[in-house]
Amino acid sequence: MTSRFDPRAPKRLLDAAEELVSRDEAQRIIESAIKLSKAEAIEVNLGGGRQRNVRFAANQMSTAGMVTDLSMVVSSSFGPKHAITTTNDLSPEGIERAVRQSEAIARLAPDDPEAMPRLGPQSITPLPGAWDEETFALDASAGARAALSALGPARARGNLQAAGFLQVDANINSLGNNAGMFQYHRGTKSNYTLTVRTADGTGSGWAGTEEPKFSAIDFGKISARAIEKAEMSRNPVAVEPGRYTVILEPQAVGDLISLVAFYADARAADEGRSPFVKQGGGNKLGEKIADERVSLYSDPYDPKILCDPFDGEGFPLTRRNWIDAGVLKELQYGRFWAKKQGKQPTGGANNIVMSGGTTTREQMIAGTQRGILVSRLWYLREVDPRTLLYTGLTRDGTFLIENGKVTRPIKNMRFNDSPLFLLNNIEALGPQERVAGIEAGVPCVMPLLKARDFNFTSLSDAV
Image (tube, rainbow, N blue to C red; front, side, top):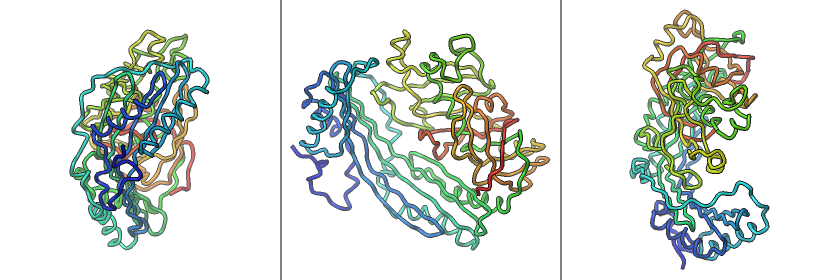
């Protein structure tokens, strides 16, 4: 039986809105693969949807695109042997070919000593708030109008160049297996980032955000922020590297602090490969590892940051308090390691939220004798996993603070520091903000943060 997702089915060029798979359709497609299976176990993941994007650079609109895709991942198992194949050919022949290929490869695969049985039916509370019908129905002209909110002011200045990327997604994620488990989630997301540079090439400003609803983005505010940063950062001067009090804006906090949650893996700690290894043996669960104002959690049901309520195996995700009032409360247990250690599995962190405070940016600056205001960080790379030491660069607006005022732009600098050190040197926390995206690629809500003794190690000529 063919379907509208069959590559041979007729397409209407402007009918892409129908490319999203409903819950019933996803279940039918997944079950059709399961019925074909000759393996002892089969799991099928169906994911994809529609992405609209608008890109502009040098004060000109450059591209407006739309991509629709739907892919199927088939995992077949024979005892401890298993293998996967991926296809986006959802014709009956394509589905059967993917099933047979995964079975053939699984029979040749070596035994997996950590193979786990498939999950049975799981109870998961739906997340209707993750879906916005108006965002789904958005047309290309809305993206163009959003871009003009930056292009107009930049062109009017006469000495600024704006470049940005707006991406509006509507996606589904569905998972089923022959043990009776079936999950389905759909969500919308709008991600907008803007870089404005001065015509003389010495100044750069950046701003961005991400929201489930397109209408929640204040494009004018983002434009004004990036333009202000660019104009303020023109002709930066060099300052001596060293340890400084820093005020990190939420995007910069997200780049660093999200790392803590992703390193909070129980197995890595138990095997001595983690910053949460306890000297003398064991892990640091229950120990104070950060300032008592710090709480770090993941929660797919948090209204600020709704996301998939299940992980890649269909395991239900709930709120997990990794750090609570500065104390390491939980480590992540996958199903295999939880069984081996006699623990309950937790699932991973597919979003990250850090607690905030009430100190404003202006109050933080006014209370700083000498420090550095950082707009965001860039190109972070691991130096030492045992201490979570990372290196990276400041970018798109770095400023010197003297006697309670921002006095001048400064050249970007490389840092070598650990988010765990940062979380123990906090002086103040400000309001939270959903950031535009971190290198780990998960939704993130972070506060404005002021900390002492942040370690800058060298200068960079990069703008």
